[in-house]
Image (cartoon, rainbow, N blue to C red; front, side, top):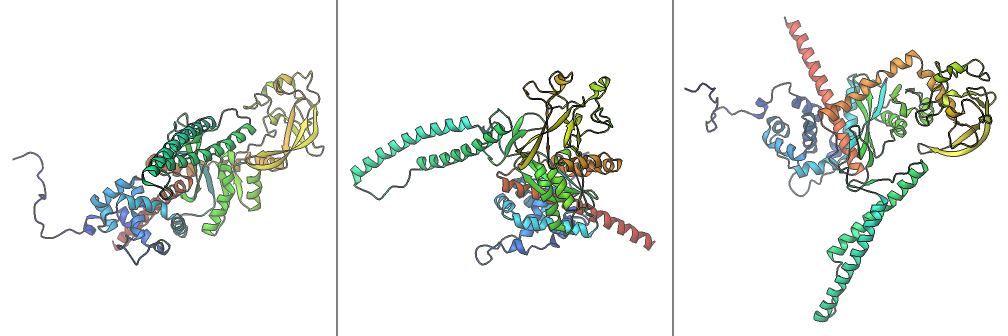
Length: 526
């Protein structure tokens, strides 16, 4: 007799009492709660996209969406793995009620219903709000970086595109000569024929040429923008997914990336808004996020917490106009406490023994703008030596994609100043200048608010709520690189992931509440 356990049921053993799928999946299983939550949503918009008068009856969209979302809860993103699961895993088989869904259907479905997916995301969010899980008292806003489906080595520069266009032009000539030679030979042999179709080789070359010309235009615009910013390195355009942008990675190096953003309610860490940006400028998305949240939930967030990159003048003003409190570390370069430049009379010089404590700008390696004190009544700055910087002129400028007017203030006493070596750039021939725009007072007011203990305490709540969804989506789900290509498809993929994240939290909450009610009922029964 074998020491090891014997099989309970032989593979060829007849079973008198058949087991149903419903018997295999225990009560309270995640897949049961998921199915219950999704059956409670409205699927009429999804079903309206189907033609129900010809062909085989389609699988209900609720079922396919359930498979995709349940797959995300089980850390499965691959459509081929999902196809396997629907035929072999009892929880997936229970969910589909025995239907097998091929990977092609799943792939097409995942990108077909972007509008309807937003409705589902909204419906689950409103359900969470009804349950008291979303309150919109405080909402964090943050972005992360996810690699595009594009190798870091598959990128173009303007010079490379120009070289490839020249090579393609030479290839065109050879293909045209060969095509004309074949046409002439056929005409001589068979007589004049109807106009021939473009040879496949030429048609493919035409497509490649059009793509290269579009890339050349994009790179020319990107190079011009980089020159305006003072950058000398050429722009790079991903050749596989041209909607993405080459950005630095946290693990080192550069690669084509997207910037997904998420707004998270701090009460129970539910995502209330999800978007994907093709570049790294997430600060321009802050105010539109607030408007989208209000549109979805019919209620505006009372407060928004975001990192320091979002503390721009337009964001500060726009949120104040919407009566939304804004907590974000200020980037305003005004003098603050602890800075020797803060003194009762800015016309008096900072004592020489305190000069080493004057802040240095990390960018210019010279005295920071916060060393210069502005006196509104005089419309004038004063330097640490007490010398005035009167208004000189106004000039137009572009900051973060917005046209603004900059006021320039210049010092005339830099020659012979003992602080000149630490203050004035070697390239500056006319004295130290300080610029100020019409939103500077708003940034300074915001900076003063952020120095209060209450503001710092509230802002500290951003770190947990803002990073928790990204931690689950990237570390647990493994979403460190998108499967799809193109901005619109990537946005849909990100929305699926965020919907799955919220659905997971709803499942956990429903399971917790049912266990609590069962315990209460048991206590009352005893």
